[in-house]
Length: 260
Image (cartoon, rainbow, N blue to C red; front, top):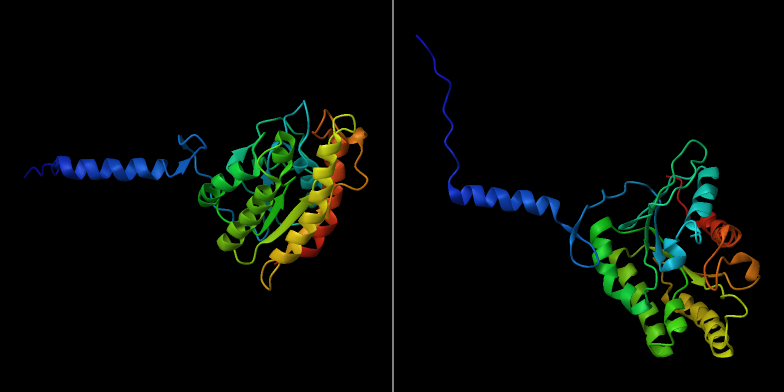
């Protein structure tokens, strides 16, 4: 007796359509800023999930100028910390391996973006990559002041709203708020200098007002001691400048990073 192989019926058109929709949706859950589909990154399982957030000082543009992320990453590696940078952006520049490890290129920096643009995009980025334990909020309001718009009060409102959104996503988040470093001395007009100096004080106030029982907001002084020798151009860091910023971040991170 010959046993023939079982025959399989072709799926109905409705079933095939539903299957196709499910398959496509599994590959198109994440979106780029322009709305096009992009690859979703896996949710981090680290005990210290760190999101570098901001504009070009986060993004970097090797070899033209540096982000602080690589210099800080090396310090965190030396400290033996379990940590993971997250973000929907991937830095494609070349970085030397360190201590036998490859640099973690993930970040949430976008060159030229204002506080309003960051606020508008943040919910989507958090949906794409997950919620951080620690946020390194770089140069808040910097591009707004460089552009001369919007009104200063709106910039402060945007910064507060960004912090509100981060705390809503993770009520236990710790946010390190940069008191932003200045640009080159011959670039800083009197009005720009005044705006930067006002922001120094206002960021301290914001940190105090936004800190609660579960979520700490810490203002870190990147302004005092920063000078022209740390800049690759009018506003962006060279390697020494990137290390200056990392050196200010790391001692604070040591007090809040978890070991288990």
